[in-house]
Structure formats: C-alpha cells, structure tokens
Length: 512
Image (cartoon, rainbow, N blue to C red; front, side, top):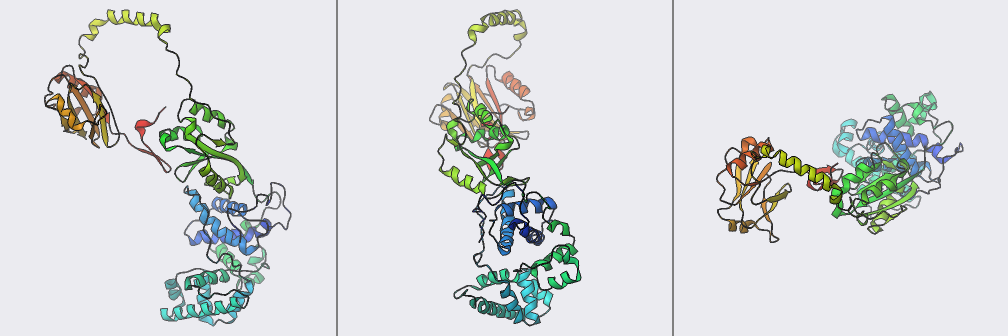
C-alpha cells in the first residue's frame, strides 16, 4: 500500500516522463477521485484546489503503485491536504483494510449474485458511500428490507474474498463495510480515455465501471471538465519534486520574540502545530543573515532556537506545503538540541552593550543646561516632581508596582468611564497586605485602565478620574493638582495577540 510519508525520493525528477510513466497513467483516475471526494465533502472543486491536491497525491505516490493504490492515495492525500491547509501536519490515517488491494473480479462476482435491490444498495451504500437512511429514501422500501439486504451483501462479500484467501473471521460489520466500499469502487485498467467517456461505447462501459460512472456524473453536473483528466502532453507531471525547507522552533522562554521571527521571514514561513515554523529557504536567500540580525539583539538568543534544514521531497503550495518530506523535518526537530540548527551556520551571540556616550556629549549637555536655566520660568507652573516615584507594569489580569515603603498608595480601576478603588492605604504599612515578598506589590484586576498614585501624605478621594480616562495626560495633571507631589502611573490592559497557534502577550513584545 502506498504511504503518504514513505514515497521514494527518486520517483521522478523534473525531466520529461515517458508516456507509460505511472503518474501519467494515474492522472485521470486520481483527478476523478479528488473531484468526487471534494464534491462529497461539500467543497467546490476549484481548479487550483484540484491541482494542488493532485500534486500532493502524486508526490506521495511511489512509481510502482497501481491504479487502485493511486486512487486510495488520492483520497487520503485530500484529507491530509485539508489538515495541512489549517496548519496540522501529521502522518495520515489509512483505512484498517487499506492493505487489501481488491481485485476488480470481486466486484463483478458480488454483482453476479445480486438481485435489483441488492445491486441498488451496493451502489448507493458502498459505491457512493451514502448513509443508510438516505439509501432507504432513494430505493423506496422499508428500512428493515434495506438492512437485511446490507447484511446479505456482507455475507456474499465474505464468501467472495475468502475464495482468494482473504479471511474475515472475527471482523466487525464496520470492517466488512470498509472492504465492501473498496470493492464497490474498484475499477479495472481498461477504461476509455476522457474523449471516449462521452461516446455511446463510453456510456455503456460506465454502467459497469464505478470510476467512469463517477466521471460521467461529475461532467454532467459541471464539476469536472473532460480536459482536466488529460495529463500534460509534454513536460513533467509535477512542477518540482524537491524543496529546501527549514523547520524552526522558538523556545517557550522566548515566545515573546516569535512575532519578530515571523516578520523577519515575511510570507515565506508557515506555522505548523502552533509552535513550529517551516521556512521556504529557496525564497529567502539571505536566511542566515536575517536570523543573525535577531540573535545579535537577543530577540531571541541563539540558544533559544533549534531547527533542521534539509532538501526534502515536496513543494511549496499556495495553501499548504505538499509532499511527504515535511513530516521528516517535524519529526527530526524533536530530537534537535536548543541552540542547534542543522544545515545553518552557527548564529552569533548577542552583541555587547555599546560604550557609554556621556563623554561625547558633555558639551551638548552643558548647552542644554544653559538652555534649561534660561527657560526656567516656563517650568514654574508645572507640577512638582513626585516625592515617592512609582514604577509599574501589568498583564491582562495583574498589576505589579514598586515604590518606597513610606509611601501612601491609591490604586484605582477604570472600566469604561466608571472608576472604583482597588486598594487604598490609610497608612504606609497597609501595603503589606498586597506585598509580593520581593519588595514589590501586586493587585489582581482585568480593568480597562489602572491608575497608581503615590504620595507622602494620605491620599484624599479622587473624583472625576473616570471622565478623564481617554486623555492620560489630563488625568495625570488632575491627580497631581489634587495630590501635590504625587507619583502617577496609568496603565491600559494589554491585549493578547495570537499568531497561528501561538499566543503572545504584547507587554513583552519588542514592537518596532
């Protein structure tokens, strides 16, 4: 059975393929299966979608696969592509009976034993995959008759496959149904070409061939063009079969820098599984320089990155990365050590801090001092500096601040324009109630805005701060007028940012 993650890398290259190459022979059946499955799933079979899924299926198909395996691979490749389109890259799931390759003679043997009701249920329930309630509605008989017919088909199927050495003792009805579904959709290799489907001979053939029957119905409904079943006249079946990929991961301690890494790689990166970055290296020739520019600034540090770069079987599709090779990378990176990026030169350590520039600016500071002294009159109307300075930061749920132990503190929460007190100290020692144990203080709140006020004296009730919340400067000036010498910090609630599966908190992001 063909495996989506084990197709041989040398299946074919970019050279011209011989006329009898398997991918050329399988082109039509694979296309029909993909379009049929898309329509059955309620997805419009746009040409670009069909083309990308077909590329994915052919990349995952070995050169020795027969048509039945090719059609199976097409169905699994579609499900896999839909997951990859949404960022989920994992080994695909195959049917429990996928290793059994049905013989087209099995289908005919079952039909030879069928009465009209059996044949109708076989076609609707197993070939078309309709639910049993819909089969009952279409055949127009009681449900008990349909279920009895289905049980009879299971028994006939067991007998037919046993004659070829496939024994189903101990199988559940669901397993037998899966095998019957595969048998019902098995066609031979003597189908007419796309042109012949629309002839009288083609219509006669389609009455006994599930593949051609599907193709005719898809053409009649406008979902499939006969021309789409023709392989290219010349040139390769695939645009490319190999891609240079880098699978990169940022350490959890540096996730605040993940957004910078994404920006540095532009549109040539896809997020996989919420924490892995897959980079199309061929589209980023200066990849190492871009990564070095980040690690030199410790955003993130080089020891907080790990990755694997390899040339693998696949393509960079418009909606997903195609082919089996990407799974090799996502597995390999789990075994890589932090600070190691296979296939990439060692990234530089952070640059040392620059020397102090004070000695170069002495004359400038002197000039500024003269300017300040000359304009000191204009400063006489400003509020006096805070007696007890305060520094604070917050997450979406917690405010943490630091100030002098002798300071009185008032913490005010503002939601909309409604203000309420989170903490008020009647004495400096009251702050012990909210101490964190490391010299700081913390209050839990998810308010839109939090105002922290410090003073050397008891702080009176502060009215009207809610009305000024939209103008931080005016709010701060109003507090300082009511509380001379007050320290004031105003903090809005940070909003978390989600990039693919990674949640980043803006208070720690080095925005630029």
